[in-house]
Image (tube, one colour):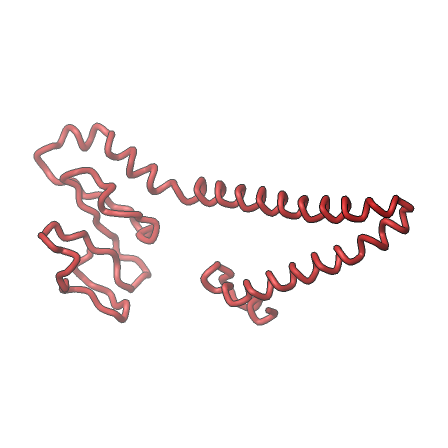
Amino acid sequence: MSLLWLQPHKEDRFVFPIYPLIILSASISINQIENLIPRLVRLIKLKRNSVLFVRRLFLYSIIIVHALLSISRTFAIVDGYSAPIRLLIHSNTTSIFEKSSDQHINVCIGKDWYRFPSHFLLPEKSHLVFLRSEFTGQLPKAYSHLKNATRLIENHFNDENKEEIDRY
């Protein structure tokens, strides 16, 4: 686990190997705390039949706190990462796309190509374009409108993430 702290980027895709260890540690901790409850009840001088109540209260509170934290994380992720989708949905109602119905419009998202959700969200007669930047990998390509397009082997794709000039 200490090796992972040395990594500069601690994203989910890099940290996934320690998830089982985190779960195991949490389970052991919960078990140890639950085993201490009878001693705690005796120390506080509560009735013996309150041990079961305190155990259930402890376990239910852990479940509720975990559920609330999970739900709040989900809402935070949706709120934090939905800006590109909201922007593209708004672009479908923008007057520039309505006024120029006979010409194609280039939509440039700059260096934030990795936040681009889908070509399907672009307005009709608009085309996604990219700017050259320090990124030299393969950029997304427009979906083919041909019949059975998902079965066709497209040109200008590679499995080595090399830059394709036709994307600019």
